[in-house]
Length: 308
Image (cartoon, rainbow, N blue to C red; front, side, top):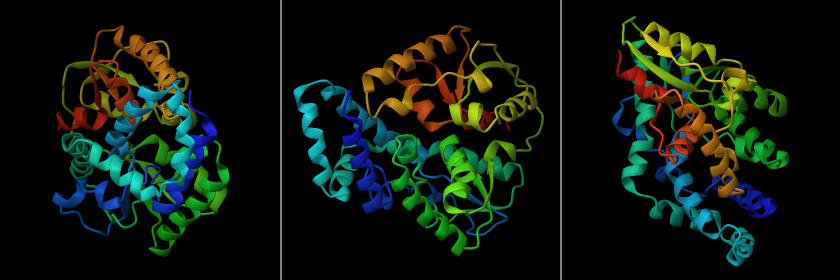
């Protein structure tokens, strides 16, 4: 295990300097929308929080953390706080494969298609689409989280944004629950799957659904994607730990201890694989972490797009 304080200080410094926990310039992270011809205005603002876009960089950084965890070299990590965030961020971006970066944007394109199919009036503004800062909150640096959240909230308020469509549980929880509490900013925040109105079909398919902790335990919306799946004729297998009793995928622990993260992931993956059906996740962190187990897992958006 790495020293948590070292990790927290590095992440907080990166967010202060670059608004990204990894220090990667925005133009190197958020390019998925360039071929989508999206309007800037609509009843809702589509807000990604950059979480799906970060997944390939998380994978790259975790590979290096795994290599040096519990070795003498791990002690030198604390000196990374003295490296400018954008320098380490550009290095991480260059070490991450182009194929992986491109694939990370596909769920976002799927979600755009699903929203259009459901006739939702939405726009997208990449200049307003910022990381929420949720990892700082998760790791206990409340001061750094609040400072960042206030900047993000002010940008949205200054642009007159009131209704927001989110696509991942971490950003949804931050904007819906934490921003009002710590910044006073009030937005109408709705996960994308709650707005979907898809034509009923009979896909005659059975899947195992993995509920992310924020959607299942804290926001209580895990029944909604099940209703969407049922409307397409997609049945859900039964497992023990689901909905508000879901089990963690292990992903949130990987920046502190990849070894511990893998242990948690393997336990959850075995449970999800037991029915022998395809696994569906609706969180980028869960998706990336469970894939490392070798499980047959896919994003909810990709499954839905196949059946509309």
